[in-house]
Length: 572
Image (spheres, helix red, strand yellow):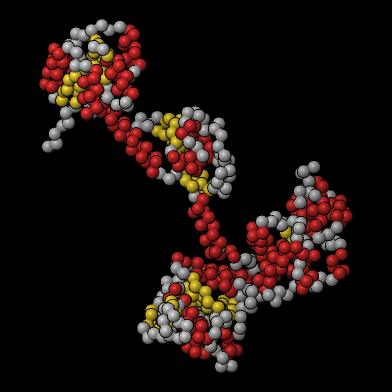
């Protein structure tokens, strides 16, 4: 059985008889007792060990018990002190209490008074030690937590903040005691919304991923959680707010989403909807996919969407352009080689198939692959095994193959230029990307998508294209497809100095499709809804609205009068 701790008591008195009497009474009750006859001897004992209680006489020769009490508090010693004197008066009592004495006992001291006071003081010390341990543990937790922790009372006065609050919120300990709504902090104070709702409802509240508009940390993104402070008795006393800095995570997710964003395949036409549905069906079906279509239709984006939509999304996506390399280089690139396999092979090399293990390999321009390489690829597709160039050791991989071509592979099979067995092995599922001229309904969506992308890239604020430009886009055959559209808009961004792209900003081959008559034609067929849209977008600035629509300002005024559009102007 564990032995109960004996509490240590120090008796300080210049009278030996009192020291002896107190020591006897307390020792009989199980206390461990030490005695000191004066101030200096007491300090020496205190310096050598901790005590749970100090009983000190007011009169100690040259020094007093008050001096001892003051010295104990100065040293930060957490031990209750009971003052004892034969000449109690208001001044000494008030001074002792002011300095933090636990109690004050007049002489002669009766045994029951001594034992009762000692018992109460020891209980106080036990509680004090528990509170100190709790406080130390809480401080350690506060220091170790990377989130900002701020506690407030019901009047929104700050009770405590941790070190991370300084980093995340620029809020140090100097704000303790101040109202959080009144302190000067370099942010938009979004966190106050959470605190105010918690104080009002006495319930948890969360703000997920909000921007602080922090002067010191641009684009800082945080998640704010506030909870009520409620004690064991169920009494509500305030709130605690935890602010987690998620800026880095938010940036990583944005970058990841930018790469994986299914919406990179922009379009709402029926043909694109069918492709979206097919991609979703293929995401977790580990079959080979062949993507066909003209150059610039987005075949690589489809490959990315298939990979990142399925269970292989955490594995690598390795891309190889089969038309960019000679046969020997492509073989080494796909399957790797060992040192000395050929001239210049001065070290071992891991091939793309091995790098794609657990993920996906995208073989672009598969129609340009030689017959020998077609045979090697066929074996990999059938057996999931290959050897590096110059090595006979088989390497087994778990790789999904997605191939793409802008050529007619069926025609190449008939001409003997592409292996029939490989063609059917690749074409388990075929996705044919329609050319842009066959899905012109998607052009306005693509234009908006690329304008947003280019605004971010060039740090611009271009709002759109004029109606003349949109008519050119809708009538142009787009031999380069979506890629050509993006390049045309990038060209226009470089030339455009206003916030609307006009005919003058387009590449020459697009300009040439618009006749001189069309360039200067007043569009008398513009619907009132379009006029109203342009006016609202331009803040009812008629010149800007005319520029957005590619018509004259005179026409704008005439249309406003004709359709009585001023009645919709809530800015007047």
